[in-house]
Length: 428
Picture 1 (cartoon, one colour):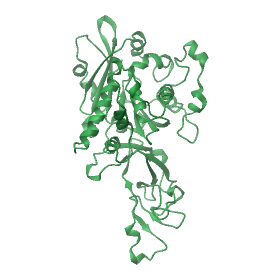
Picture 2 (cartoon, rainbow, N blue to C red):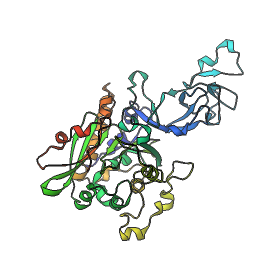
Picture 3 (tube, one colour):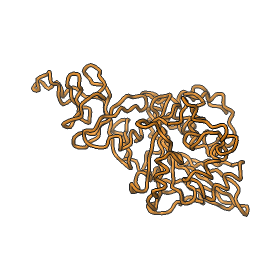
Picture 4 (cartoon, rainbow, N blue to C red):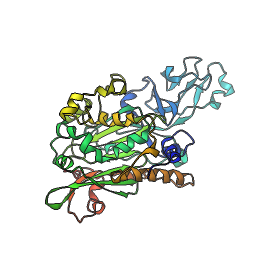
């Protein structure tokens, strides 16, 4: 059954006061890479999240702030401000703000009248974890514990995180991330050639069985999406993706390659940040793996220098190579797993009209994710806090595993789906 227009509106709109916007504001979400604010008193950074224009800075003492972008005096963007002496000073008339958004100085007003103390910008907490700066934009009394996804708790040498701009609504990007049926087609060339994927036996199962069977079950924090393909001796190869609300995925590993996944964070209703992470639970990333990630291999992408815009983008038709498409080097003619996904997701337009879809059995994960998001947003309006906030619901892993035909994947892979420090991932 296609998604109705009003349901599509609910799912895709995330500004302040919208049902889905309020849902997103109950979670810690990635705001910036730590490297974007590398040192005390460095340049501030513009941040737009959930349709709110904000400014992030690290003050002289190293404290992090995320505040309204605009000065409370005349509305000047504080991106032009001077980051100095534990605060951000507007260059227009010198009003100064600390990391909480509190105005601490109005030079034109006598200190004794206390005018500055009455001025405070909107602000949100900003914390550093796993090379990422996270923010929580909801009611302070509902703030959950800091995130505990495994990639941001392992040692730095075991992980790599990147982000890129994507020119479409977060939902169609996220739905692509939980749809593993397309891997056997769109990413078929990369499975055998990308250094972060090749060599795993699981690739043979992906490329040898296009009639994937899906079983999707609810987990405490979201969904377990099981994709079943035929293996030897009547057994099944299962790739089990974790989706944790509202927008986190953990993609099943391949062989001894790192585990990876995504967050899709709305910038506004028409664009999003696609965050990508790789990590290994038991060892440091090799120099070759890290270099490949920096070079835009695997789920990461090459960027236009000095930006987070992919070098392959819709303005240059993603550097599509029809000869490579015809030769089968790349199934779609586009190089790179991340951009293969983005190109098709962006081709749908800013917000796809889901009322025109014709869904099939392999779309069951997408259908259930939409249902869980809608249900959680409606329950939140009744005061019921959504899934995915508790730390135990974040300490999860994806898994790829071969099971006998009579096994129930959720039970048979139960231990493999829990993140345990220094325990190898279940992978084929």
